[in-house]
Amino acid sequence: MSTWRNKQHPSQAGSVRTGHGTPRSRGRPLGGRAGPGRMDLIVSVSRSSGLEKGGDECVFLCTHSVQIINDDESTLKKTFSFYSVRLLLLGFPTSPHTFTGKLREGVASSQRNDQFALEGSTRTVYESSLYLAVIFDSPKQTTSIISALIPEVYLSTPPPHRLCLPTILLSSLHHLLVAYPSQVPFNRFLQSIPETLLPRASPTYAWITFLAASLRTRNYARFERLSRKVSLSEILETPDSISATLGALTITPQANRTLAFKALFTLLDSLRIKSRETSWAIIRSAYRELTCGVQPSETKSWLSRSLCLQSVVSDEFNVEVEDWLAKQVPLGAVRRREDAEGKCQLNCRVLGKRRRQTY
Image 1 (cartoon, rainbow, N blue to C red):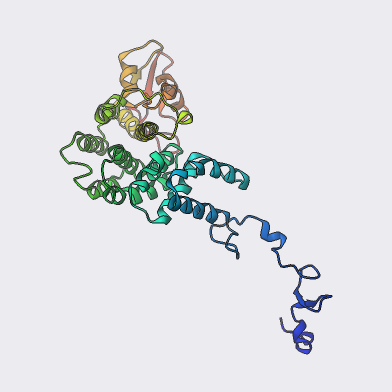
Image 2: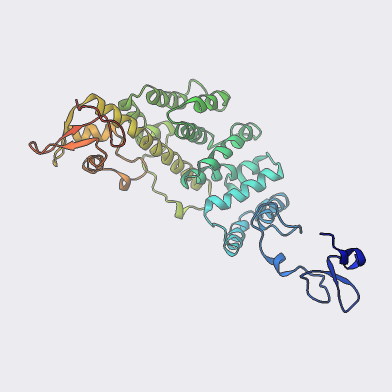
């Protein structure tokens, strides 16, 4: 702001004379200082802020990963410990998903499409980041990684692509899940995959298309059969049980393969849960009442299969039929009959919507 004093003394406008005869900015200590101020030592929050080159720690992490990737591939393993300590000191999340995301940004910034970009230090940087994004339930990150990985990275790198097939299946399930019940993104993604990566006459292509068709036609019985763990294991030619856990993973090809299957079964289980409400609405519209006592019965087994209450990830996530029906009582979808033990009346409307007379 221009004032009379500033006009009279233009050299002192916005500055104060120091004892050394040099002007300094307001708020600066006497005598001036060549080094950064106290505020300059605070880590910048944004990814691109900061006047100095090293002011942004997030950019520093990505730049450091690019430097290591371009200089020496054998030192990539050392960045795991470096990032863990650095992110912890800066207060950033130290999950494997966040860490591999930094490595993926480094690979993308280096613009490398050779074998290292696909299998950096015996572990796929892009693929590992994709699998961890699925396991840690990050749909936005998953979508962005898929668009960069399939099919450009696979087509630009020489074979063999050992995890290409599970990755394509995982990406297909992701598109079915995030857009459910719409299948437009899924169909676009499937059409964009070349024949060399996913042959149209292969059992894998048949399985994923049949699975999508069962969802589209609301054939919940067929969907349950196709989405079983044993069905997918036969397609992938893998053992039925995946015993390795995320905490016991090592940087080996077998560990990366196990991580891929864990992410694949995680997405498949999420899709089964997503379709459960649709199947439950169809059952309530088709049946007036059900008999589900305490003892095991064919009705309970049928309802468990129809609603996909058995988890494909772990048995600890299984849902019992009694627990499912008990949760539906407060919603108005189920009403217990007092005159008949074990019988439940089904209502096609739930609370919050206009009720319709039960069948």
